[in-house]
Amino acid sequence: MNYWLMKSEPDEFSIDDLAARPNQTEGWNGIRNYQARNFMRDAMQIGDRVFFYHSSCKVPAVVGVAEVVSGTYPDECAWDPESPYFDPKSTPEAARWLKLDIHFLKKFASAVPLCDIKSHPGLADMMLVQKGSRLSIQPVTEIQWQLIHQMAGETP
Image (cartoon, rainbow, N blue to C red):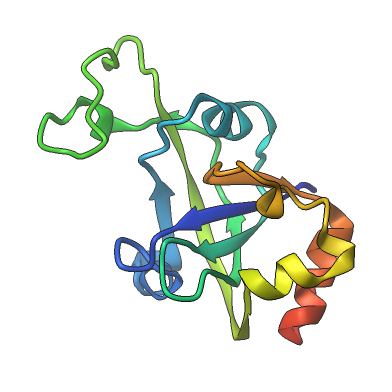
């Protein structure tokens, strides 16, 4: 099993939104970075665990856990001219952008803020805290997975 961190702006789509979806499952769309897309396409697998991270908000934080429940498939919003994720170079015949489905597992009783993650010596090499790292999908090591669960007061 692999571990990941997926960022979402909570005013666009929060962990509570995921929990409220039918079957608590949603397609993770709007990825428009090739490295993040390649992580989804080449490395993420059904059963992998995901930290749900609220970004671009007052207190950026890891707020819960989800699970990858599908392989990748074309992100159809790339073909919708009304979508903010529209890409005229992507077509149904040659889909440039992909998505996959994630399923809500739990919301942490205590979110783990970015400032706490940055100050934890065991998380100094986490991609999230590296200067210039802005990817919306990032790998997380098993040790990082365990440490963040401990910080949240949760059992992995």
